[in-house]
Image (cartoon, rainbow, N blue to C red; front, side, top):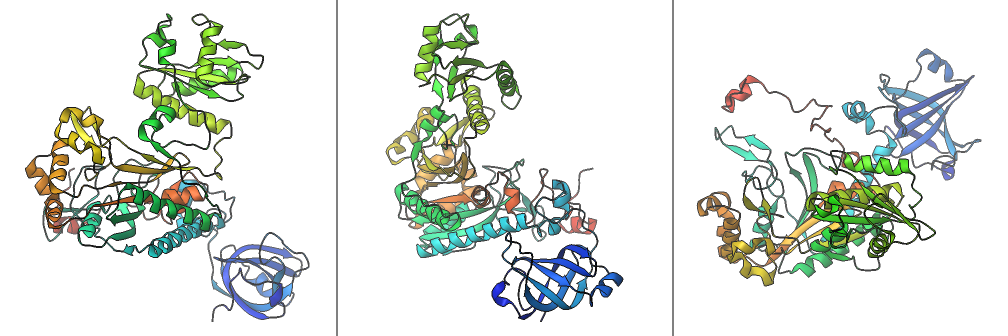
Length: 582
């Protein structure tokens, strides 16, 4: 056999035992007539000692980093112990060895603090995966996967696979399309989610379904987005919103307890979408710290300050203990909000000094009593700093949301090892797309309105008032899951399609299979999908999901290791009846 033990399991209790190990050479250290080698595999590192009798062989054919090596020897106690590794009390006194495969010098060091840049490590991802830091990320991913499966199995969920080659229904993000050789000029699409299939499974009577499944969206990329990603996809029949929230809150608590040893004794807080937008400026608030947005519009208008008088919204936050900010620091924040990504023209500040006096950048327009009214409205205390933005409502609210997060980061309030989950509920059912001059579904077109608002579906003038029976679970300012109670009656689903500007013919062409299924006894049902990659990244204390995917794409959506996407042979194009545009 190639090995009797792994490189991570031997300890002082194995002293005197003859063993065989196999792995990769991490380091080689020669001291006169003896040589020490650290041998690494997936499970850990074990130190090898090559004595005088074996050193001549090493002199003739030196070992290099990443050589694949098999050794036989005796477990002995180390004189210089290493308390940083589980095998640090022992070493293997080697009696024989065999180089199973030599290796070229790696393009970067295979260690936690590597000297390889992102693109280089992506090109040689199979080497990067040997690093302990990456291995720990994939181990965490596996543990989360196993924890989720065990929980769902215990609650009666059945894992059912759904197709990857489906029909394109471009209602959300762009589809990846796949040409069909046997059906020329026709295309499959890769699923953005198994949404309609899991609803059909509910119609079929499989009342608790789940899948940890690959999904595909042809979108621009960022740190928490990849063209292919993994969802924990779930659906339940004969449920209301409360059933979904309770079940999957329990799942999250189970995962945190198993993976991080964290117990949540209290129910997750809940917040309506309207509250999230008013107090945090976005629908995925980070509640690890306070610093809520305060609307000052009614308080500050009509004082002759043009910036405020012409603004749709004037909004402030109180940064605790920041009244001593220097002019340089305030100028830096002003430039920060002027960046194109934020898009504001400037920043107003009020220093609430520790002696109780107030000093602002608009003293010419507002006296101290007026500034005190601002401070009182923001619940600011002496020593705090008010930061104020003004402008068009949507842009200003979004900008203040970003500034709040930036201040939280600068003040050390966003601890990656502190976890604050919450549910955001009561989303709008529709939002108006100005460019298309029509209503679009905020979640997706299968989401049901709140039960008490079904009647509003008959009045297009009230679409903007309708709340969805939808919910998101948010963790530390990141949406990690979202779902809804679904429409399950054909007439309501047809009203929804009509509200989205879809003709009966178009609805029948795209979703006739679902509408037809609803006529055969569809039960009330609802579900949720978690972003598995995002959840793993947050549990691992990282902002990037790429760190938790074995073979991710880069920021351009390319696999630089495989050099994909790439062209295909002309013969393949001819078979598919595809002519490339020059």
